[in-house]
Amino acid sequence: MERPDTSERKPAAMATPSQWIAGARPRTLPAAVVPVAVGTGVALAYGGAVWWRALLALFVALALQVGVNYANDYSDGVRGTDDERVGPMRLVGSRAASPRQVLAAALGCFLAAAAAGLVLVVATGAWWLLLVGAASIAAAWFYTGGSRPYGYRALGEISVFVFFGLVAVAGTTFVQLERLPWPALAAAVPVGLLSCAMLVVNNLRDIVTDGPAGKRTMAVVLGDARTRTLYALCLLLPLVISLALAPWHPFAALGVLAAPLAIGPVRAVRAGAAGPALIATLQQTGRFQLVFGVLFTLGLAL
Image 1 (cartoon, rainbow, N blue to C red):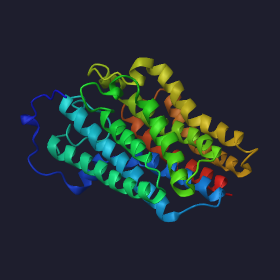
Image 2 (spheres, rainbow, N blue to C red; image 1 turned 180 degrees about the horizontal axis):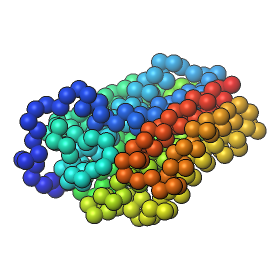
Image 3 (cartoon, one colour; image 1 turned 90 degrees about the horizontal axis):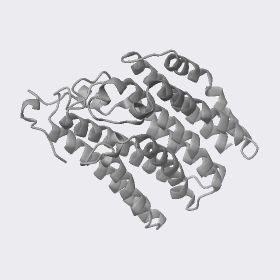
């Protein structure tokens, strides 16, 4: 990847622990927690939950989520995409940490995820999972890294749906049951949509800066109005799917109880909230995702 001169970006001092935590973007962590919870819920329904494997899968998901956040911070920072950023603080863009420090943090997270994932591979004997893990780390890095980042080509939401939906839920179920019942794939769809909602509202907020910076996210390609419709669909379709699963898993419909938490963010986005106002919407989206995930998990387990 061609990097601009970063000599003027070097911070005066090392970033503080609170800045590193902010750079990890804790509001996005439900996207890592919910898939593992739902996958474990399916494993419980089939009588095969293995808690130490579930916890290890959670560690892998969290390490990948934090890793992709730091990698995104690094790659966008050295490109200058974050120089006029409206959203939460970026470590490189704000000069709080040097690009080298943030890159090291990202690679450390990926290494930790790989090590924990290897334990699960050995435990299950499913060596093909190594390919899944390698693909997950590659997807995390090339979202904004490399010379042709796919996040700059409107493919970010598709990747999030696949890796923080299908792969995370199905993978969590598989490493516990060592088989893959169909409800794991069905339950992964609403989880993936909610993870997409987090990215959609994030990119909606940055649409005015991403376009001029050459970052063609799906929000930039679709435009403001269509992106707002996409966000509403990503938040509301999971409620419909939880109802659709009721004939096979009656308590899966418990996810609908989270519906009141979707009203506020959907209303704000449809009403035209923009810029800093969408930071609160991002937080509300994460809250809805987490509550839906807990209720959905409980319903699947029952």
